[in-house]
Image 1: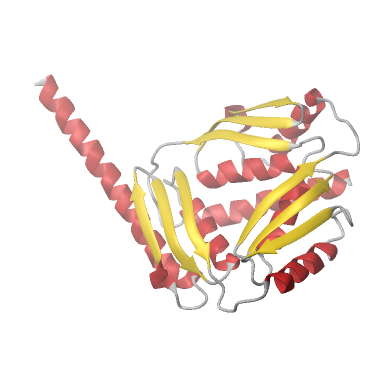
Image 2: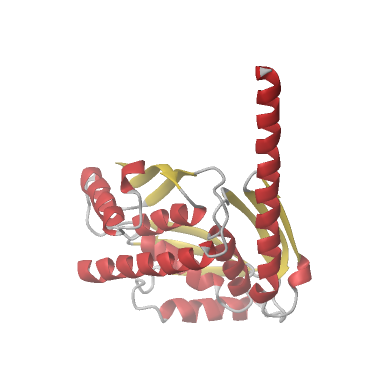
Length: 266
């Protein structure tokens, strides 16, 4: 009898996981027409297994790709995302023109150091080289480049070279303080360590969006040269129709707090 009960329980758990995967896939597919700005929703394929989501296909802009990625990451029950979606712009621009657009976009950002970043574009693939002062500046450079016309992919080969040396102990303390400032984070479950400016995050969070936001908050702290994110996402949670809205609001609140903290530090 115990063996039969155990088998029945395993079978029930398997069915429950399959149901959650199916619900996740249906939610993602239902969102794709809204996420696609140019009517190419049929080009996106979605696979879900045990909470691991795989996206593949083609979109016309990086903005479409980012919106879809953010939506999936905000769904409760998603444990990891493999994003294989490619950007294939409607218009084809010469590499030289794309590089010029990227260069102008970077020069327009006052928070980036002038004259320290070089841009090379080949076949729509943009490579950025040079030195920046913080991991945040590296991340900004990559994001700005991705949103430029004609850019299909960005290779970030920037080196973080802080103006002031900050001890690893001070860096780890700053990261912990920043995470605890964002009250929506469960700071007790996240551990922070730092060596030579590389911060390692470990622990467990309820969603992949929490994992991503913890990394973003970490990158903007002084002394951070790189981030290794080993935070794990909890197993399947019960899906509900307001999860995405809740996560979106929480995301806005967290990023706002991080922005306030950054502005205060400056």
